[in-house]
Image 1 (cartoon, rainbow, N blue to C red):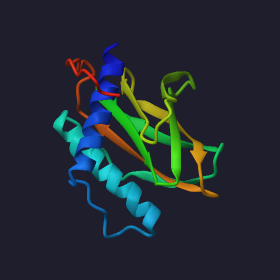
Image 2: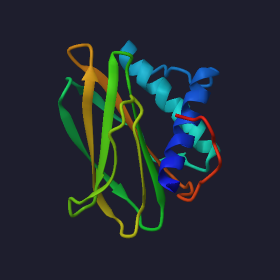
Image 3: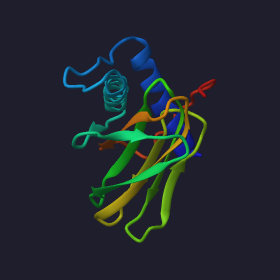
Image 4: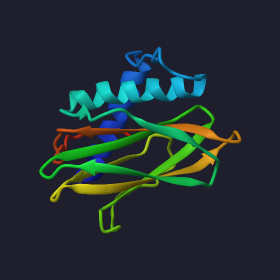
Length: 165
């Protein structure tokens, strides 16, 4: 229950920050789709910052056709709480994330019909983890996505937030 509430709060915060214009496109973006995704991730960084998270490293990005997936290898440190959030361009209708342990066991998944999936983990052993990114719905030949890794927040966020999502 706490995890679903956290997801709702984080997603609402990202939507709010983006809606009020705090997310700005990056000057270093290569194309309009990448620019859209960078703006969404910038908004996520600001929103998750309000919840005590900071982005760890640069966002991981690429493009995928509808129905395809890719795997990203990340290193996470013991004792930290991580939120891994993805965003995709305006041609994307549904993007999914699954986080796997070093032994390839699923830890968390977000397969809701949305274009900003979020998974969270409290790491009990440092090591390599795998993030599977799935482009569940894309109205173009490919859609651009980005994945941001955030650390430092609290897993136990459980505010009363009626009416969100």
